[in-house]
Image (cartoon, rainbow, N blue to C red; front, side, top):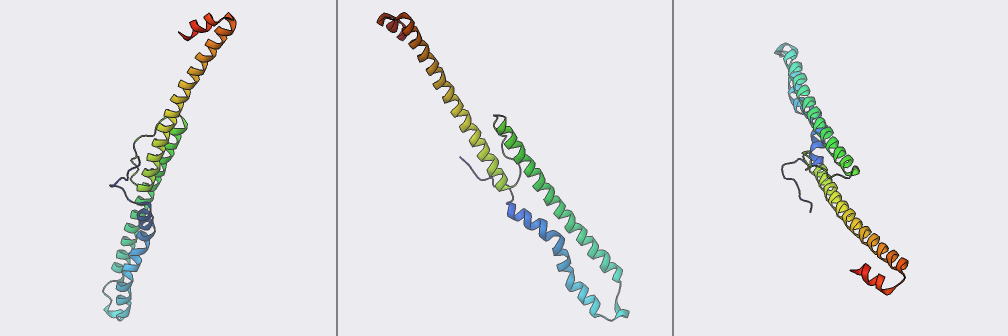
Length: 154
């Protein structure tokens, strides 16, 4: 049965971080920039400090967005590996991508792998029974007697 992984981020939260991280620093600095520009030019302490602060915060936001994108890429690679494992008749490893939705898909692939394995076993058993039954019928047909049928049923 599928179970949610509690220690993971949702894909939606990760995408929000990727989008908002580079934008929010600019929005947060806008009031400070407007306050500095509202002062007279001779009262401006250091516009260079403000520019450097803004650039630093933007770089921090960009770094956070890149980290979130890297996590998404690693998670998609984990999903791809799970699908490849299923295509090779194997069971995917335990989900460890860190994103709830992707881990849920990996769990579903693991359940599908087990189900396919069980079906393959049932098919092999049925096929072995069919071959056995066919062999008994062939032996009966070759013997041509009821005694031959009785012997093949033993």
